[in-house]
Length: 259
Image 1 (cartoon, rainbow, N blue to C red):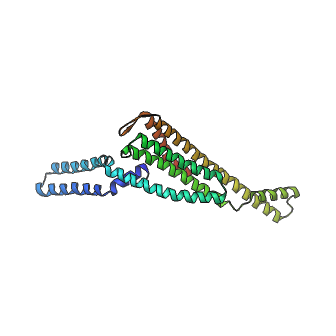
Image 2: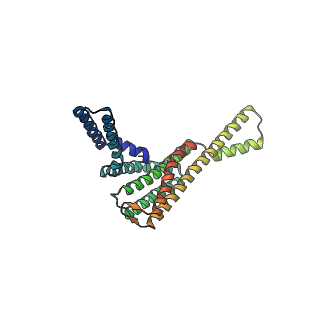
Image 3: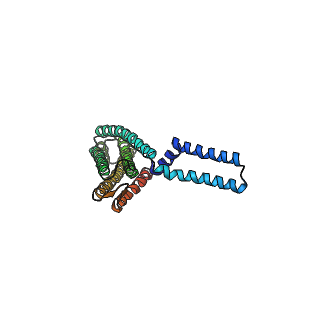
């Protein structure tokens, strides 16, 4: 659930929202049926009904029902991410990409560390706890997306043997290109080498983004651990740390589209 769109979707699909809408609509219909109001009174009644519906949004966001919905989403995310972890670990093992496997393990450890700090600094039943954990999950999910892209990119060039390509390029360079077939082979080898280099740069960018994400998660954990919190609220330092995490979550979704 993205922080904004997910919350809006939860509000408008929850049965309590539909119940509140039905109550307001019923009262409006009853008022118009029984009192036959004037135009001014009708407009006032409609305005009051709209105001009640608008007030429902902040009330629902601070309700136990919304918090439970957030927790259910987090649990579903964790289950889905566990399956992704297993697939990615298998991919990196097959591709012999130790850096990916290491980053995968570090990301999971850092998320678990931040979750433990949150549990010790905030009551798990508080809205603030769910909001912070949701943001951390978003950043973690974006990092897993990056690692998925890494695995796909590496698999796409896994059949290219760089040593073979380079040795043949060197050989053609020594003997010289004397025929059309040799020229065609040279271009094909260069294209494969360029493809490997381009893929390598993209993989490096994705890995660097994840390294930055891990740094922000570490900084957030340290900021939360070093500060006290009051019930339902975090201190300014903690809020600042989480704001940086939230900004990272918003940026993370744009990375894949720009690479």
